[in-house]
Image (cartoon, rainbow, N blue to C red; front, top):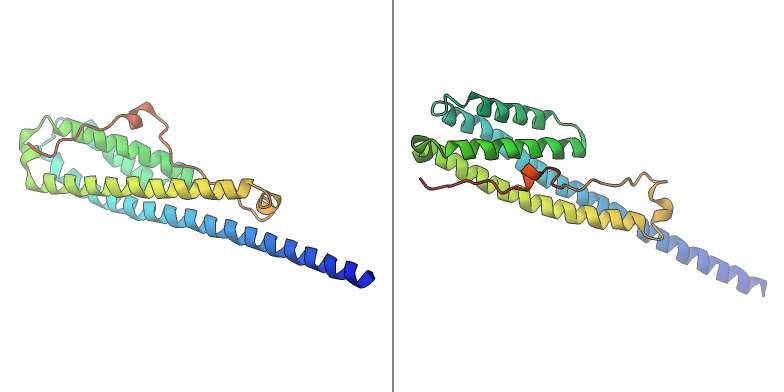
Length: 188
């Protein structure tokens, strides 16, 4: 009887160890998917940041009376590039998106600018980049949801905090200005 009890104990402990290892590895994979999602966003944000100086150079000759709009875009870009942590970056990028939307809205008042080929090309590049950012944010948020769920359910909740599996922030819209669709026309 003692041998049977010992074997059963080993089987139960072995099974428990396998379940815990599988659960741990699942959370690690999910955390890595969140990191990958964030890195995909980061690549697109870098592209956005790189396009902005060219856009600013193109519009500043046309928009001489809109200095505040131009300064707001430059300031927002600088803050976005210096933002720390995911939550800080999310907030700074939201402000940059608002500044760009405002720039494009004001550009509607300048027919010569709207006809400029460089401006149109940069506007198209930024639009394409914004679409890629949106898709990347969706992938990131899906990954965050999966990861946060895994770290909150049994049995992973038992060791999530112990092994420093902290909650990840969603990329969400925080202001009513961000919720409004920017009014951008690509045709003059």
